[in-house]
Image (cartoon, rainbow, N blue to C red; front, side):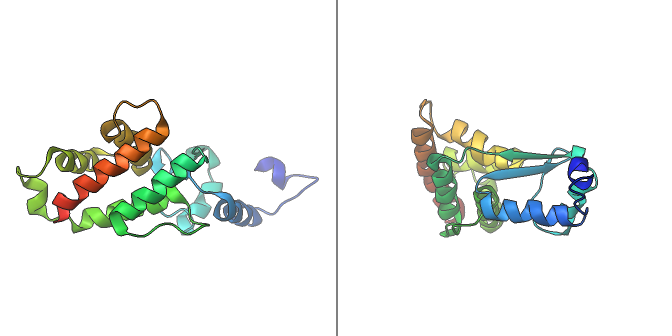
Length: 172
């Protein structure tokens, strides 16, 4: 950033956040932003402009833009809210928000029930232990639910099937 604000460009400090987040909104399809190691939920809110004050504390992870990951995240959102992200929505945060909305509907009794199927208990346990929603969605759940398939497409498809099966008894 210091290079952009120095001669010959001389970009004003207040303009840089606008340019960066315009690019993020226009081109970010599967992106995770962490500040001081913590997942940022509100990427376009007021706190996001603070990233430019101490850029060394922030990390931007651009996930695979291939169709299989984007499709998985879209399907993930649909499993939990019956909504898919729009064409310009960032998929990781959309899926994380969908999952959080669903978790809010799971009754305490269902969380403690021993009659709940193992896949539903495991899903709720993984959600309770997860520190980073992006890690949970993109890495933990596909490893936990997706089986041993070497193909990411097959692992993502199996993860979605397992999530659908786990979702119903948890809220039913």
